[in-house]
Length: 89
Image (cartoon, rainbow, N blue to C red):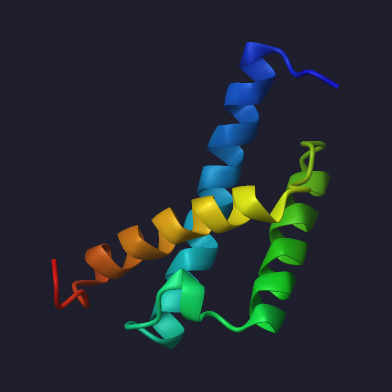
């Protein structure tokens, strides 16, 4: 099913908000851990939480793990930079 541009933008913005919050939590737990280092079971739990939040807003859930990985890689990187814990930044 294709989404209208407005719905697509709303979906992307909402996913960005939810993943940003999840990334902050991950960085608070371990300020040096990047997304590839997050254990698989934690990634599954995180996807379930994000999808639950999306479903509660009547927004389509994330089906493709590649989309979540791409978004979380960026969100975790940004959270690390914001927290000032990035030794290479």
